[in-house]
Amino acid sequence: MYLKLFLIFFICNIVKVNLESGEPFVSPILTPKPRPSNVFSYNGKRYYIGSVFKANYFKATQYCREQGMQLLSISNHLENEKLGKFIGDKGLALTWFWTSGTNLVNDWTPGTNLAGEWVWLSTGQQYTYTNWFINEPSNVTSDNRAENCMIAFLSIGQHGFAWNDVVCETKCFFICETISNCS
Image (cartoon, rainbow, N blue to C red; front, side, top):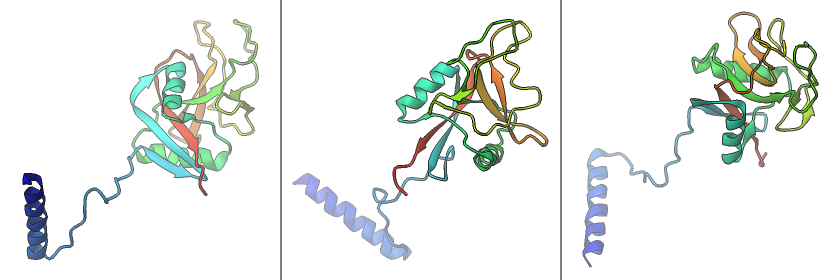
């Protein structure tokens, strides 16, 4: 009984306030939530820019999968440019982001500059488009550690959203993606 009276009082009070203000009442339950500022869509894909915490390549892969997504794969120049623009608009130039790029699925001999083919782990496909930064991939650090995982970053200058190979245990932000099921 008290609940019914409370609800009637509450609704009447809302109607009174809205009548006095002249503004229509919009239920907060029916109001769509604002889209998070770190999510955007392009060409049938939805991207999540994971810039809250850093993780190594494997933890980033796991996090994306737990969200029903996968680490980023980049199909072409236009997609790479759109990602770079979004990153730039967020003020995240020069920030490293994991992608699903790796050459871990292929053989590589430490101490050599020869590495296997780079693939997108999320799709299993070899690269058909690349935007490696100058002299990359180098495949090895100065202290001879293997660089088998790929990051992307918005470089200052002509390279745009450039790619680099780094040690997989490096902690970086990351980009998850999912393919939209609806057109």
